[in-house]
Each structure stands twice: as C-alpha cells, then as structure tokens.
Image (tube, rainbow, N blue to C red; front, side):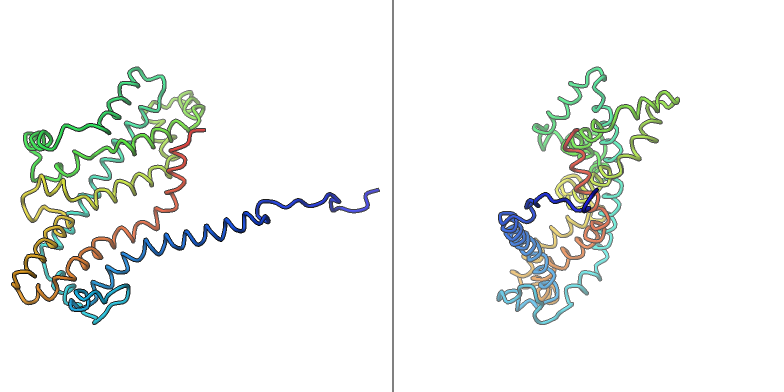
Length: 302
C-alpha cells in the first residue's frame, strides 16, 4: 500500500537556492546595469545636444537633458537637398550591397561546408589569406579605377562584398546541419541547387538574419570606400556627408562665416548622427531575436 504520493527523500538545495548563486545574480545585475548606462549615455547625450542651444553645448552644460530647446540645426539640415540625396544613396547602397553579400557569402560558405569537395582546403586558405593580407590602398584604387567602377555604386559594393568572418560563421552553421536531410532530398530527386534553396535555406533563417544585420550595419556605417572612389557629391552616402559636415562646421565656426551655420555648428553633427542612426535602431529590434541563436549555431558545431 502506498501511503503517500510525495517523495520522502530530503530536498537538496540547487544552484538557484545557493548563496553563491544569489551573489552571482546580484553582481551580474549590477554589472549589466553599468554596461547599459555606459552604452546609452553617449547616444542620449547626442540626442540632447541635437536639441540644445550652442551656448550650453560649448560650456559643457548638456548631459542627457536638452538645454535651451532649439531646432535650428534640424531645420537647417532638413532644408538641404544634398542631405536627402546622400541619405537615399545610403539606403540604396546598403540594400544592394547587403543582398549581393548575402548571396555570395551563402554560396561560398555552402560550398566550403562540404568535406568531399576537391580543393576545399585551398579555397578556405584563400579566404583566410585575404582576412590577414590585402593588396594595399593604391593597388585597390588602381584596380577599381581600371575596371571602370569609379563613381558608381559598384565601387562601394564589390570591394567589400564578402566578409571572411561572416563566411566562416556561416560555413560552421552549414556544417552543423544533419547531412541526412540533404541525402534524403537527393534520393527524392533534388539537385544541388534544389537542396540549397528548398532544404538548407529554410533551415538557415537565423544565421541569414544575423548576416543581414552584420552586413547592413557595416555598409550603412561605411564611409571611407565611398570617400575614396566617388568624387561626385550627388553620389556620396550620408556618412561622407556627415564627415564633410563636421570638417565644414569646424572651419565655419573658426572663421565666423554664415550666421545660421555658426549658431548650429555645435549641433549639426549631433543632428546628422541622430538622423543617420534612426533606421538602424528601427530595424534592429526585429532582427535581434535571431542574433544570439544565429551566432551560436554558426559558432559551435555539434
């Protein structure tokens, strides 16, 4: 006869109930709060500066709360047609470059993930070599110019189409997929492209979303490539506009040139940074849920 349903065995204290674990949670919480504060403070300071009067910024009285609410810099910047042209260029460059990079990285990583591929070690070695060595600034400039890509979108997109780090992460992810799935698809009559499109890619949404985030942020923030290969103002991305604005605002302030620009010199950079960062902040929450899963699946094979 069973006298009771509960176990009479003594309860053991798990790691959640231990004193050490409670101390760890407290320390972990304090550290993470500190990281959040350190991360958010610069951005909040930029937003506050973009809404403050120049006098308060120069005297260092602006922290995370705007002082002397002023929208002069926003009005000045939004009335500049070149800003919106460069902003549109950045969107186009980022979308096109990200699509090309995802296609090339996925195809290259999928090929490298096959151990039976002849010459696989050579292809991996070529990719790793480019990760540590490059042709140099002048040879790259001569190459891009000789190919007729200067002052075109391809000068921004092609030279940075594949990131070796992203390639290796995606390669490791493909290697972690069960080979039995592809073998079963091959038995059902699918060729290599069918297996990739109908079997592998639907299972790779997390890693693809992560790579899209990596590439999009990289191309959105990039400015030196366009600064090097593009001479026409109407083809430049907004990051180069920001770079020129910082240099121009500093010189305008020191020379006491245009009155409106001098008044907004200390806030123009902050306004441009805020408007440039907003699209990334709007997209990131929708991709962030794939971030940890995609990186971990692509970094650990098992």
